[in-house]
Length: 121
Image (cartoon, rainbow, N blue to C red; front, side, top):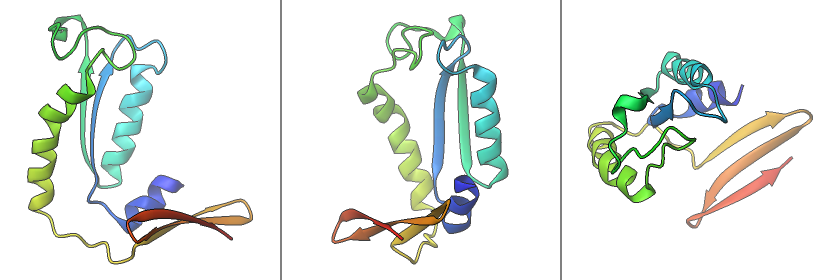
């Protein structure tokens, strides 16, 4: 439900995933299904499914969870592409908060003076 609520508020989110087809923690088909759901909800989605042939020893180092990809290398590769895509989009987000109902409570995350504030009602 939270993904549907999020998609109603803001679709200006880009999801990029590198996932090992041998990931011992999360099966590749689960990641594929998750990314397909995000795509159906209207998000910009990119799934890079990694097998033995894509291990280069520099960027992709192994088939473990995370593929041994250094954070710095990931940001260096993906951030410029994301920023370029986002610059071309108009932000439709007018509110500075989002609320998620859960049971008999509502969790509201609000941007207040550059800090994230959680309000539970």
